[in-house]
Every structure is written in C-alpha cells, then in structure tokens.
Length: 278
Image 1 (cartoon, rainbow, N blue to C red):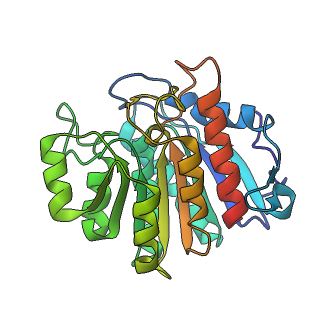
Image 2 (spheres, rainbow, N blue to C red; image 1 turned 45 degrees about the horizontal axis):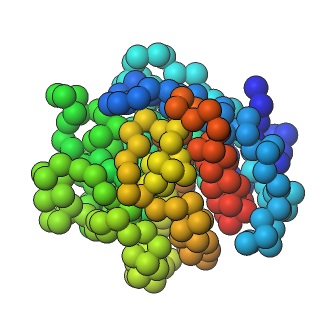
C-alpha cells in the first residue's frame, strides 16, 4: 500500500495521524468513494512537498499515515463503530486525527469521538450539500444525514456550513432555525466567522464537492455552481492560528475522473492542512 508522501515511519512522535475510511455504503448517486483515500495517496507523489503559500515543506512536519481501516462491507453500523474506535485511539495518544473518506457519513463517528474530548467543539463544514435530512429513503444513517446528526449531537449553533448550494426545502428551513448556513459563499463568510470562534476547538470537515465539478468531477454527487480550487485553498489558509483538533476530507471518488484532478486536489488539500497543523 502506498502511503501519503512525507509520512514518518511510526505513529510515535506524530502530531497528526492520517487514517482512511474506505466506505461508500450509503452513497445516493455514484459509488466509488471507498477508493478515494488510496487514490489520494497514489497521486500525492505528483505534488511537491513544499508549499510556497505556506513557506513550509512536509519534512518539517510530524505526521503518520496509518493506512485504511478494514471495514465490513455493507455493515454500516459496525463500520461506524470501527471508525469511532480508531479516532478515539488516536485522541488517547494526544494526536490529531485526520480522516480520509469515503462517503461523508464517516465523519459522524469522528466528530462524536472528538466531541467526547472537546465539549466546546465547533464544526466547520465545507460542502455543496446541506446534509441535514432526517433520513434518505427511510435510512437515518446516510451521507445525506450526517450534518443533521452532528447538529443534534453538538448543537446546531455550533455548526457552520459553507458553500452549500443544494438541499431540500426542509433542510434549508432546518438550517435557518438551527445551524449557521452560508449559501454558496465560503471564503468571505469564513473570514467573518473565525474571529467569533477564536480559541474554541474546531473540527473541520471538507466534502470535495464544495468545489465546482470543473475542478472536482470525481465525486459521488457533483453539483454545478461551486467554488474554484483557489478559493478553497485561500479559505484553508485563513484557518492558520485556529485551534483545530480534528479534520476530514471526504467524497473523493476516482470513478468519473480519468484525469485524476479530483484526487490531486484532495492530495493538495491534505498537504496544506498537514503543513498548517502537523
């Protein structure tokens, strides 16, 4: 198995631990996100280890790529339990978890584990979709319900949603009353929010489809009208100095993108976040 470029050899001494959650059991349109973590590792060697924007290179960081979890195919509940257990183990070692999806539902057990340690948690959610449904086709455990579950767990007032441009009428109504949803906008809204949460523990969840399909066609539910990759990176750089305690990047799917540009975008997002927080 290929590891992400720059990973140290042992978990001991790492500040951040990468861990893959290759699950796409509840994807509602195009499957394939279970292959996303490994594809992002595979293409990472196509990038430089140095970021001119941050003035740092991966050799200056301490992160460990622990590979992908073994998840029982088709068993959603058991898979979520395994993911949650792995995140708790990372936190017990005083390290920051960085989860690679996989579908967006994998974020819930990660947020739950982090919230158990940091009760004043804030979740920053970058996505095309609100993910605030109570169920999808009768199933409450779905990538379409993940942020609703997060909101009910930590309180919707602690959830900030950026880049959202798709959802049901009911989801947007729920957001108006419960979460902090910024329609279509990312960078400018994030700049306004960050001073108000300074010092609080932050969990960052990025669905790659926050990007327009022109920049990220390889995803399960591409949604036209998104932001460009440059805006996403500039938004990530705004997080410098924030107290980030957990992260994930989800919904990268190699299918539908023979150019690999979605995985490359994902790999560069991973690199920049590692340079900021590892």
